[in-house]
Image 1 (spheres, rainbow, N blue to C red):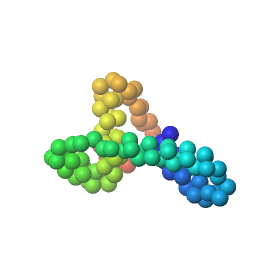
Image 2: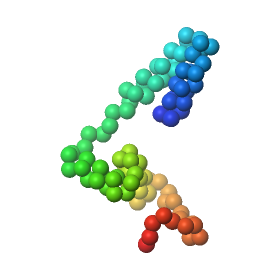
Image 3: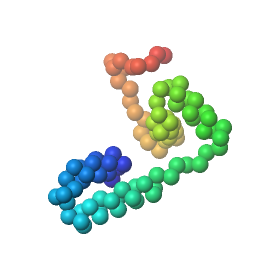
Length: 96
């Protein structure tokens, strides 16, 4: 399950808490606790942290989104993921 799906499940449970069984509520709360336990970030050197934060601000994306972009592009560059094809007829947000 993703964090978003767990958040949606928690919101749904909060909206119908009177109708939920104790067992169902325990399952949802345990999933949420497990997800929170596994959220620990990757420790980075201060210079790397500063660079990521600066680039994320420059690109107007979140730090988390930037890290996802960097990892995906590294995986594509090193042939761990197939390279995404860019549609030549589509418009892009940047410039070449």
